[in-house]
Picture 1 (tube, rainbow over the protein chains, first blue to last red):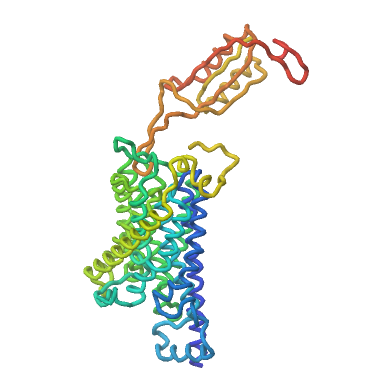
Picture 2: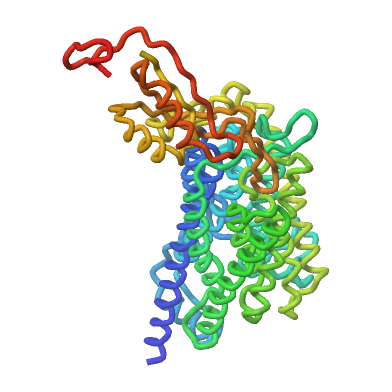
Length: 422
Length: 112
């Protein structure tokens, strides 16, 4: 009888992992739509190509070596299906952990849930470098990022390994529940390195230093993308509880869903209000970024805050993101979709907000973890981008940029039946 | 014969068409276009950065009329398209050398 319950628990937890993984996979669609909406029509196909290709590259590279670097086990996922003693092993592990202990689930489900996080981190990069980066240079970077840069910092955090054998983040009280830092800020750090080497889009900054706006082509797509991300985030945070099959875990999952939603709502309203007060208009793109900022902010700890705290944590993220976007523009760091602000700057806020509601985390631990991830991903990315730049170049020509990356890199137009003004 | 070309605010099209219809005008051509005059463009704000919209959307209306009707057509368009705000548009009147109805081959005033 006990074994039957353990088998059911195993099945439930595995199923829960897979469904959450599928939800996170759908976030790739959200990023694709958001980015396609916020670039100009002439860069639509290219940004979509980057988004679908980076997802596929992430899946392959994480399978080849990323997962092994992060969590151990063999390259190419050797042995992940489990051996002949699979059932007996699982039951033994369940018995040892007890009904309310750590969950036991299929290793393949664990990989599936992890691989979609890698793709999320990489998706963040594509938006920031949009409209001017070479397609193949971007994909070359995606290979290194998902095979090596991300898995290594992941191994120091979720993987539990020491940072280059020097210190252990877990011992210092670092806690990042679903990856405000490990996934989102990491993606933004790689994006920042790329943007600094790449430079701004032509026409973004006038000779006298004025910032020119380059409005996105399709705000309905951007709004749809944000809703898709919002939905996928329930898998992102909810799945990170790692277990559903007992009352305490089920409650925790429900709280995480509730808080994730609350933070997004708080972030959206805050960004909309700041936009109205600061610019005198309700800027939809800021509101959308605000919702995502709320989601990023709560991702580091969605299980311990009360619903009100979660709303406030998201709300602060929504305020930060508007000021950050304007500040980065002033610094001439051109980020067409606001990815560095949403995922990087607000990701830092998310990490630093954890100790407010989770006593197990410490500010010093959060700060050291934040710096560890940022410095590693930023420096490693800067080196990789530089190598790619020297080898094949990372930026398309000025004329190609005027014509649009769609024609330059993909040889077709997204809306061939329309006469598109530049 | 004259060709009356009027640049008007897009939302005034229905008023202008009705006014010309009352005068017995049988046909007209409308083109969506962009431009600026003394109104200039205006600035908009996107994600905190200003940008200038130089060319504002307008409609270009073309009507071929008999010489005798020019004044009342110009008067009707002026009255119907006017909002008393800057950017109401302009009317240009050209001499028209010939008009031919494609279906019948009729020419001149007959073809209007």
